Image (cartoon, rainbow, N blue to C red; front, side, top):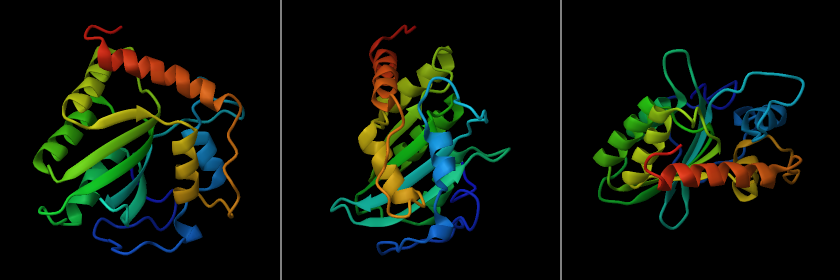
Length: 208
């Protein structure tokens, strides 16, 4: 998912900032875009729009120092997850050091992207990947829920975004003009429903 930072001036594959980044409003998601794309409502509220895949990531040392962060969206022939993998690979991280990566994603990964993420983490056992999804993508279709199970089996944490993750995403990736995060109506109710659905997928072998 990468157009990078939501519209303009996304970081290139070779760009890397190794110190905590200074806020740059040119590199942040617009508030309306964030609410439209990360909203976890079961139906798109008016005015109607297409929900796309956006992936925002933070690469951290184990002491929580942020080394790099960015945001990608799907391109026609390349999904956000693959662009994210390309970006992390381009950083040439030290394999003798451990890192953690937190990803906030609007839609859970498709089967192909799930397999690519598993291969990526399998080849890079010094990375700990946590994925928080706002919504589940085609979760009732077997290859899609099997992909989520495959991620978990590979040691990749898969969870649903709650108020805490939405707030952190708002603070880290949105041009919020220093305003606090204001949750939309029924955010926690929708999150709890999606979380129960994900839990069934990850724990029941023959779901649904």
